[in-house]
Amino acid sequence: MKNSIEALEELYNKAIDIYNHFGALPEKEIRRKHFEILASQVVVSLTNLKINMKFALKDEKEFEAFFNDNKKMAEIYIHNFTQNIQENIIEAAVFQTELVLRFLYAKLTGTDVGAEKNFYRIVATLFEDVENNWTKDESKLIILLWTFRNTIHTGGIYFHKQAGDTIKYKGKDYVFEYGKAPAFQADGHNLELVSYLLDAVKYAFETATTKSIPHFDHPAYAALGYA
Image (tube, rainbow, N blue to C red; front, side, top):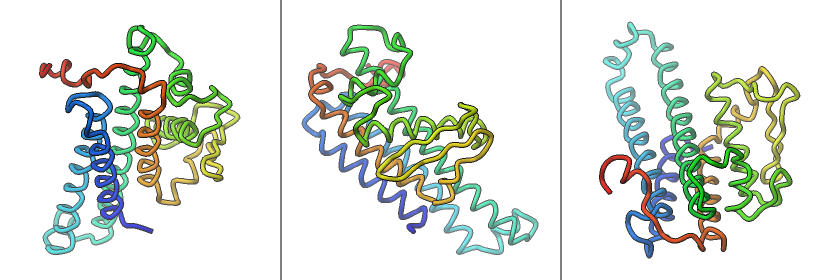
């Protein structure tokens, strides 16, 4: 299994590769800019992790002094810090992707952003799939990560459906049990799922439906006063 630094480095490189793949698009164009934003968020987390790990390993005694010279507490800190980085990246990737998909759908349908409350319908349209009868792994992954994102909001515990839920992706069942943390988290491949998300979004940006949408700037430019 890759360590977190290796996984983050691979994730950053993939985001940059896909950003370059859309290099023919204008610099501010929403599809291209999306991957630049994701790459920036990953590299910040990667840098923070490298700094912490270097300090913890190179200046071990000074590092442990922050925890009253308790080596076990220092190890727990690194574990929690790494876990928080993974959760932050998952949340950022999911939120940023949802924002972009909602803007693309609004442009496609000539409606206001947020007018369509059914996010599954947006996924079905842009991924050219069948709502709630998903035929594409890319769509299934979106639903999986959105469900997983919601457990992060509730302290890592699933509370959406009392009957629970099971989402099949790439031949594996991802099980969500009511009142429990998803067991698949123990596999330690959360960042791998984000890597798959980059591929899924790239796929969505290249469907005939999405390609038919005229180019427009990422909303961050107007929101931050850079338009």
